[in-house]
Length: 318
Image (cartoon, rainbow, N blue to C red; front, side, top):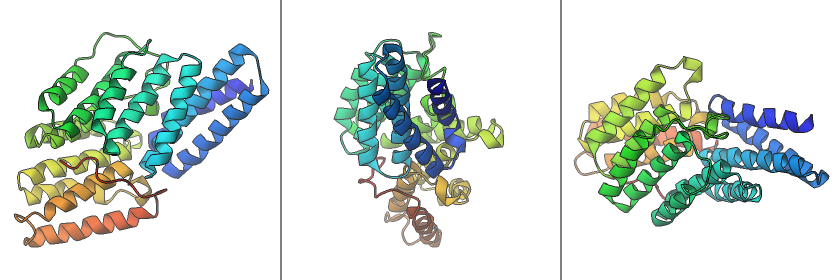
């Protein structure tokens, strides 16, 4: 019964991730990981240990994701490695693939895109993966190739991600879902960032607008603020590439109103990229650019107290 409750709590947290305060997610995930690890110390029953390892691995994976959102890259890396190890112990392909995908994502954030590609390739070889898992890994692969400046490989990964349609599912990415899922709005948002790395303003704008359209079709209380904020900022970055200051400001307005606790690392680094772009010689003398730069700095300063630690150098800078 205790394992049943733990399973239910982990699934609920993963599914409520996008609608729960980040620090509350952090607290609950840390608590669940501690409970699962404690249970593993108290039983030698094989089936119970298998369930305990799975719960511990899922909890570590969720905790890793929220540590990244709260700005602590080292903690996120350590916890994803923990999740991968637990998945290896019980030979759980989807958990290992999710954790390796997270490590790949964290690698290009840490300035190691070639390592990210290798980790994705490893993740794609685990057994039992459904379409959602493969789509997520291909999206991450596209971002990694974007950081490497490999246009052909990045575009191929984006195209393959959009074409995943075998109908296969797995018990983590699909049955649990939530933070382990990868819906079409998240695919579009991440692809927009890949196009920005390739300096493809049209592709980035189209993908960002698609993400926002898909998010807008959801009930308001089901729209993940962390994802929508990133999509708004990527839309602004696409317009900045074309020198459309009015369009940049219009795209950023919804992001500026996001509560400080929901301004995750992804949104803050994207905002920093916009701030850097506004310093370009073509814009820096414009009153609109100066005012917008000041607002971005205020946006970032207000969010800084909501983070666990500083972040590494920009991972999404073209």
